[in-house]
Length: 344
Image (cartoon, rainbow, N blue to C red; front, side, top):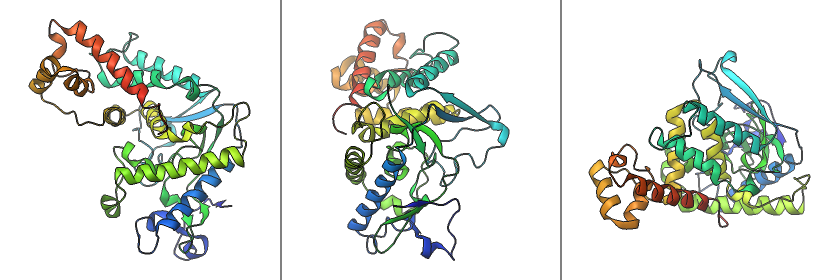
């Protein structure tokens, strides 16, 4: 099995310890499909083995007012590398359920102690609904295990360039205890880059792995994880492993990241990504286009506008606002719950 290393590779040791997967993944001539799949299988096996270690509480590191929040995967190295020691606030939560309840209270506090309103802050409102859309099977009795890094990306995974076999993992100094479905069982960061608005793209990435390609590799990785977790590793002390924990981890991780960032623009961007995936439509509309679609376009047009909750478009000032609001919120809730249904 692959090992852990605490330092980055250099020219003198790279060949001996392996090559960063980021240097190989897009070189289809030298690193073909079988090597890609071998690397993903090796990553899944290591992470499934790591998940057998259980902990009594989860850990969250957030920036305080003197620092800027950042999304894991949004820079290419260390999530907290630019932060001073005084700018990180460490939290502990007994469970993922408690974590979600805590941040629902934080959203309410941010709204001045009132119920989070779609008219005051549409993205916070949508985030609150996203929390509520997470099914009980993904909220309660979720094992807490070690996550190697808050930026578990392919530059930190060293592989054998001849076989694709994983040799070692680096850059794990800022690892933390997380619920398994947003930690050890989640997809590696580069397989979720379509859920990370500020992901740093290299020139190779711009012409490789279409959305369908990412879905293919996610399915392969999830199948590997499910096989290993149920056949080889007993990852849960009370409940057996649920394959949906991995298959839906891109949504869970994005919600998690939206909750822990202290940068509102970043949070809104992550919520925006989830709304886009919920509706699979482009929805940036002018005020007049939104008005016409909502009040003249029927349900199809309304579905498009729900993504913005008709907020910021001036629609809530119309006499029909109460009826429209109920319809929109009900349809939005149905769409968001749909993210967690199906096999992924």
